[in-house]
Image (cartoon, rainbow, N blue to C red):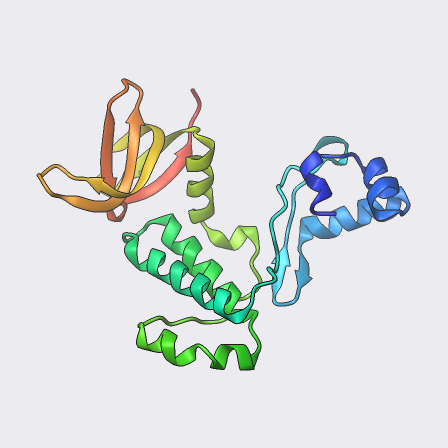
Length: 208
């Protein structure tokens, strides 16, 4: 059902062509997804729009990885998280992904790489069910970045910048050699400015 949602098919086609069920059953299952469906230790939510078409893309829920692959994935996510700056939404999402993946492991699977992960300084904690609404601004900020929409960025000193996010990560500062974790914004006049995540208070979509 989640995979079929990529095509934004209506309830009738979802019912007869995918679920092999009645339209009432299809509507009920979509209603369940709207409220959140628990799968293992995770929860999946999806929006749907006019005529029953899905508006959310489908995402993998559990991947068929062996323990070595899981270990590499956890280490990569934690390294990325630690390399990000304070306030970087990518760090928040990387931590969430790593913790959710770790929480899905069996006791045996957690035990095998525990010493290596501990030696590397990584700390994982099982995540609770992941609902959209408990991600605060982080997922919204990343959504604005990947969609290229015009945003208003409020800084901690009260200044507001308007433009499009064109880069994240190590951004060049005002002084030579200054490479601070942050975002790069292309302003309406075509110029670009980089600011550290620690100075960003909020990012909101704006018209234009």
